[in-house]
Amino acid sequence: MPRIAEVRVTPILISDPPLLNVQGVHQPYTPRTIVEVVTENGAMGLGETYGDLDYLKLAQEFAPSLAGAELTVNHLGAGLLETVRRVDVERIDNRVQAEGLRGARTLGKIAASVRSAFEVAIYDALGHELGVPVHALLGGKVRDAVEFSGYLFYRWAEHPGPDEPKDDWGAALDPEGVVAQAKRMAADYGFDSFKLKGGVFEPAQEIAAIRALAEAFPGHPLRLDPNGAWTVPTSLEVAAQLEDVLEYLEDPTTGTRNMAEVARKTSLPLATNMCVTAFDDIPEAFACDAVQVVLSDHHYWGGLRATQDLAAVCGVYGVGVSMHSNTHLGISLAAMTQIAATIPDLRYACDTHRPWQTEDVITEPHTFTDGRIRVTDAPGLGVELDRDSLAKLHERWVDSDVRRRDDLAAMRRVNPQWTVPTW
Ligand code: GKR
Ligand code: MG
Image 1: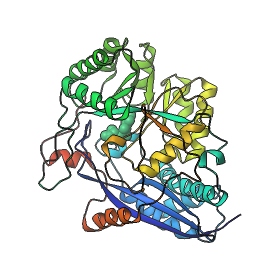
Image 2: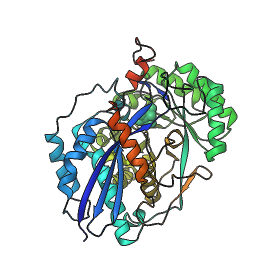
Image 3: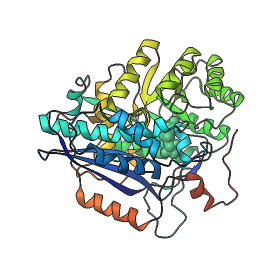
Image 4: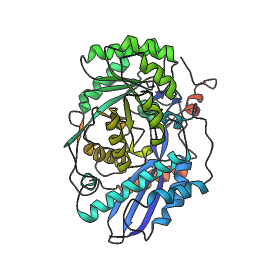
């Protein structure tokens, strides 16, 4: 087995458009962490995960311990858990801090998210050593292309500050704006299904937007995700009004009990990336049938193999599997595509933030055909690091004081009185 010679961890800041959600608005720049694993034979593997300070500190503390280790993934868990206990982790308020959009923060989940970047990088490096794609290391692909859904966001035309990144998507603040965004995504990327990030306006407005989408795209799978912004009665009201057009309703409310109550009283499947976000959450949630679809995410479930385990457990319980995404670059998209290619019963198109990120750290960012990404058989993840771009985005991180995603603070630049709404 080849050994690891060196591991590099690089924090970067990437530009992000002013996308709205229940906790505020995306900042002009958001952090990511890039991991490079180099083997003694010179093969290289890449990984990517959250860039918020706690994740970065943990990755930086842990990385040196891998030098000299075998290029395998099984030793990652224990070492990381031991390191995370040493790192001074900040307390956050899930309700108002963007991490809460992915469910409760625990030490285990921070470690899992960091682990995922090292695991992906090791699989990538191993793939290069052996000349095989990552999917082959995970048992092999069961499809040649992975379908993604278009991720629609209410958004402002631009960030409030001068000299902040701009794009040409324009504002989307009403049903017409949402439909125009979906039409452009369908034309440019061929997406067939759409997810609207809700929890931004009062539910009646978001119901109108979904209705407008259903009219513009008859029969296409649609999803609405307010990130737990609604009470149980509001969730039931929305579900009743959209039962005929939604493929699933994602995290209408927070907490397993509330989700279970909604699930009992609607025929719509409920999906989640907030209530079941770790293996520990599964027994209670599945026992009370709180969710019918779990959104996997190799970042916070702890990597590619954990995602396969999650899919297997869901299969046993008859719970569907789909895939969640957060702001990400091409290394993560390559990993998402490789793992999705290996999951037999992936019934739904995966989420991706891709249209919203225009910068990347790989030389050839992915393209979508008919809303799908072809599953490469090239060695590893099939992507190559763009060193100049990595250096430039790292330089931006060095020159900035942005060290975590903070949608609430970004919103308060415009409206200092703003608080997280509940309907
Ligand atoms: O990017 O604003 C966002 C999303 O709200 C993201 O943070 C969520 O984690 O996309 C995610 C979701 O499905 O909840
Ligand atoms: Mg969600």
